[in-house]
Length: 304
Image (tube, rainbow, N blue to C red):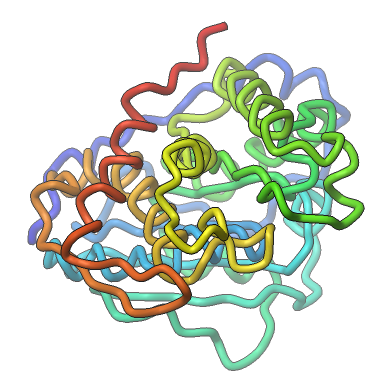
C-alpha cells in the first residue's frame, strides 16, 4: 500500500510556553532532518519500557494485514524506566537501550547490541515518536510534568517534523500485590481513574499531537469481562497478556497513529488469529477486541 501524500506535509506542533520556562538543557546534537519528507515511508519510534513493547509487539502484524510495506516500527526500551530516565538519556551516549525494529510488517527484531537513545533517534527520519510514563507513575501527573516539556523539546530538536504521541498505559490487574500498586491503594479502579486524569492533562498540555488510549481500552475490556481466563488481559498483573492483551494495545496504536496516515481502519483489515498466551485472538473475538480500541479512541477527549 502506498502511503498518502499527507505524510509529506505533516505539520510541526508548537511547543507550549512551559518549554521556555524550564531550565535550559544542552540542545540535542543528533541529525536534524529536513522539514519535508524525502520518501513515502512512515517511520514510528516508541521510547519507553516493557509497556512500550506490549503496545508494539503485534503492531507489525497489522502493518502486514494492511500490506503497508512502507511502514517501519521501532522500539527503544529499558525495562522499568520512567520519563526522568529518558530525559537524562536524550543527551547521553551510554548504550543502555534495547532497540528493536520492524520493516514492512516483519516481526520486531532486537539489535545485536544495546544502543544509546541518541543512536535510536538518529537511526531514521522518524515521523511519529511515542512516549509514555512508567506504569507506577502513569496516574501521577506530578511525575510527568517536570520532564515532559523538555523531552518534547529535545525530540523536536532532533526531528522537528515528527508528530509526538503519548501512550496512555493501563492499570494493574485487581489481583496484583506488589508495592508499586500502593500509591493507588491497591485498587484497580482508583488507578484507572488516576490514569484518565493524568492523560487528560497530557492532552491539554499542547505538547502532544496524538493520544494512544491503550489504558482506556484495557479498562473497558475488564469491565466487560472480555478475558474468559479471569486474568484481566494480563500475564502477571502488570504487563499485558501476550495474545489478546497485546493485540488490543496494538489496535489502539493502529487506530490512533496509523489508520489516519495509511488510510485503513481496523475494520478494513483481514481477521487475525494469534495463538499465544492464555487468551488467544480468534476469528470469533478479533473484531470485538478491535472494537475496544476504536471505541477507546472515539470516546477519549482531553477536555475536563
